[in-house]
Image (cartoon, rainbow, N blue to C red; front, side, top):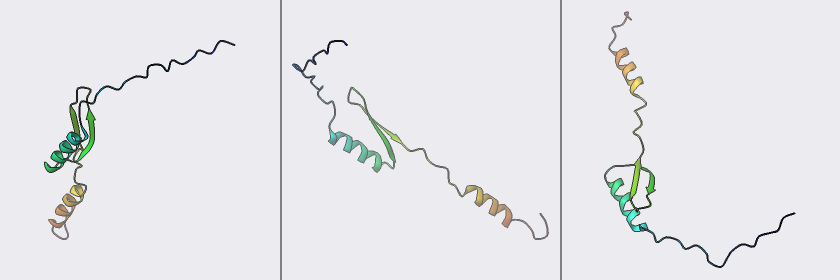
Length: 80
């Protein structure tokens, strides 16, 4: 068996100071929601930049049904 190496605990690593605050993130999300955006993701860059991602707009699901109904209602009885 090999020797067990001791762990160096003399100097713990220091964290970098943050480049953003929680208030800035909250402000950005509130502004996006006020503009009608549905925030699905929040990314924070190393430089402190905040990127908010919007949910893609889902196409209306009843469009195909509405088109079919409109065509069906426009038909004359006895004809197809």
